[in-house]
Image 1 (cartoon, rainbow over the protein chains, first blue to last red):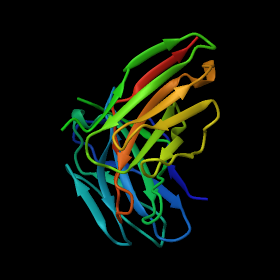
Image 2 (cartoon, each protein chain N blue to C red):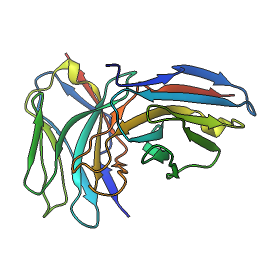
Image 3 (cartoon, rainbow over the protein chains, first blue to last red):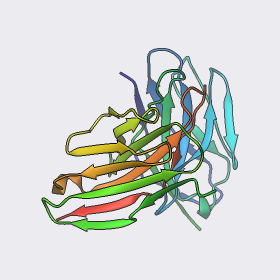
Image 4 (spheres, each protein chain N blue to C red):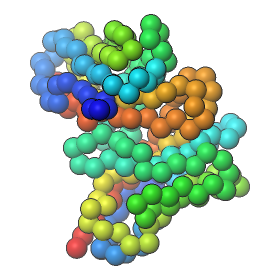
Length: 113
Length: 114
């Protein structure tokens, strides 16, 4: 079956530090890949996505590149802010048929001033 | 445009009690989902409804029932609550059939079963 593996958290960084959150996946075929973010007390919301190999998704200074050869979709940001403190989920799904998403377990990021 | 709304936001139940979690979306989405979120386990799909009039089991359906009341509303019922059902429950929706179909989530219901 499909699966998504994320690096364990929590990740604690100082403001303006560089962020990488690793994500690898296992799937038969070529899924679409997503990063969702969950701020404290809220539901998940889409951060960025990529639908095919070598695509780069980007939003709010975050970016991730769909790497088919390494089955990875690592999330990066050059300079984090306190407001980026949240839980980040990597996810995959396939187009067509019913849409069922496979989520990773989430990585908590805490940014300190 | 409220997106996905859920009620209640918080609930405490005693073991054996029943309750229904309500979810509604105003985005004309055809597919709706119920997830539970537990520490260290990410989101697990309980039930989903690909379209109005259909429902299917997800990864962890035991102890739950659902009703797709109409295109807008999708409720989750716990008939006899157990402490293992203490969790945060999220409803989500999207449009089935698109090539990159992000899901839109509600704010969640925090349920404690004592």
